[in-house]
Amino acid sequence: MTNYYEMFKQHEESIVETIITTLQIQIPTYGKISRDDVRKRVIAGLDPYARDLDTEHPKAFPDYWRETSYLRAQQGIPIGDFLQVLLLSTDIMIQGLRQAYPESTVDQINVIEKGHQITTAAIAGVYEGFQQHKDEIISSQTYALAEVSSPIVPVYEGVLVLPLIGSIDSMRAGQIMESLLESINSYSADVVILDITGVPVIDTGVANYLLQSARAARLLGSTVVLVGIGAEIAQTIVQLGIDLTGIVTRANLQSGIEYALDLQGLAIRPR
Image 1 (cartoon, rainbow, N blue to C red):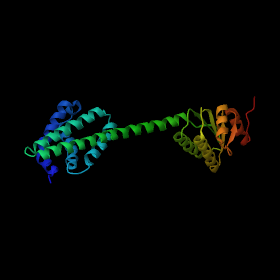
Image 2: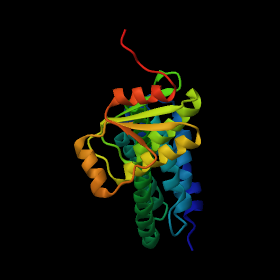
Image 3: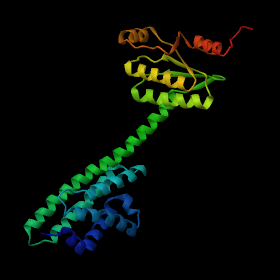
Image 4: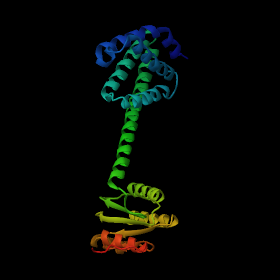
């Protein structure tokens, strides 16, 4: 059985030199990098490629490009440039190995077919690496947006107000509950007012999160007051049979604050 890795090692120098020259001519970024640095990158990528030539299912080369593309994405390298490097390098690799078997058509065909299989798997790896970086950015931005869109405001000693605005899905509801419980601990809050005036729709999932929040808050020694329930949301709660037992409700933020102060033996009086 032909060992393609050993054949690659015999012709490695000429293949590597051809790839380096091609990359530095055709890709501006590589033209600005020293030849020694380009050589290190090329050799690091070709070795797993050559090893995959002797395996049934390519793994080393796709893994290399998945990890490398993730790092390049962090550096701001466009995916198009990265794919160009991959395609140029593998094409030269295939041509170099074909020339190593001038008298064996079978080996030439094997090199081409296996090479294309490895390259295709590596392309998928590149997209996965870039997608991973993109997903992390989106996740980070989503979390930051959730914090901004759900600010917890201390309005008086022991009293917190959490105004909720916009649609609330299960993920955001979970983040709100986590932030709420952390704030109760941080401020030693006796009362937390959830103002849902700016929430257009509430479903069973969100209602359950609110109930869980109320129960968790009680375990921390805090009372949850729900304010701002509009007519549509009230109708939805009734239709869905959602039981808000355990949550104090008030019409608006003002009456919620008055209730919170009353629990502490305080009141707002006109001068």
